[in-house]
Image (cartoon, rainbow, N blue to C red):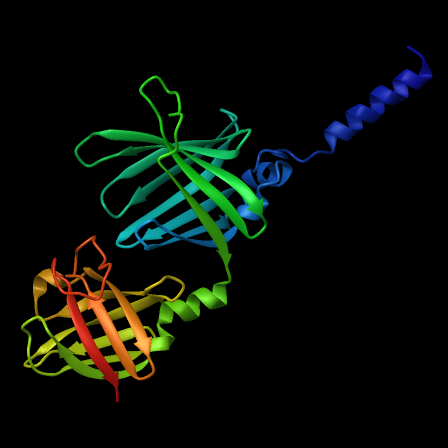
Amino acid sequence: MSMRKMFLVIAVFLAVSVVPVGAQEKLGDFVAEYGYDWMIGNWSATGDDGGQIELEYKWILDKCAMCVNVKMGDFKYHGMIMFVPSREEIVQLGADNMGGTWNGTWTEDYDGAVNRNKRLETDGTTETMDMVYTKVDNNSFKLKQYAVESDGLRASQARGELTFKRQKVKAMQEARKGAELDGTWVGTTGEGYGGQWTFVISKGKVEIKGPDYDFYSGAITLNTKTNPKQAEFKIDKCSMPEYVGETSLSIYKLDGKKLTLAASEPGSFSRPAFFESGGGAMVFSLNRK
């Protein structure tokens, strides 16, 4: 072996030797290498029904893993993404508040990043779907959902498509607190519940008193970017025990000191589409004191 070749071999050996053990085996390394670090952050999209969908990707464990949070009405999901070196595979595990458990993987195709997830229902049935993420720019991406057939092939047509926009944390916190509706509101409802109703809203908390009794207290979050605007009332205490822990999905419109609010029955998955009573929804006409 020539002296030149020997030096080259030694140089390569030294270069390999100084690479730390576990290098390129962290999830963060793969995310950066393939250019998907733009996904980290808080995202929001509006569904076909006008409902708000919140999505969060956040690093944990020194970028060895990433946590995922999804909120859509009453539905909540929490998961974790990690790289498994022995299998050379990126996996995602999670659970939702409806009793479902999720098991999936991440790959890449010509459209972008692909998250294939299998959801196990409480009754033992399963559903597999592909979620395809296509970057538009650093502040937006498109998400398409596809059914996966029994043979493992993706359906040719997407079930739906959403456009997610990056959300600034401060703006999201302010919107969630419900500052726009802070104050005391007094009025009536036309659904046979006569007398005065009072809504007291402050810093994300709400107390509602009906004509003859305390109705409930809890938390309020707003989405001011939809049309009509949306509010969600999470009940912590209530004179009707069956409503404790439930959420009332609502829409509202604000005209100066006048507030019109259409609220679903707590626990319903259907948000009112119009400011009309029916289907368990109540419409309140309120004025700021």
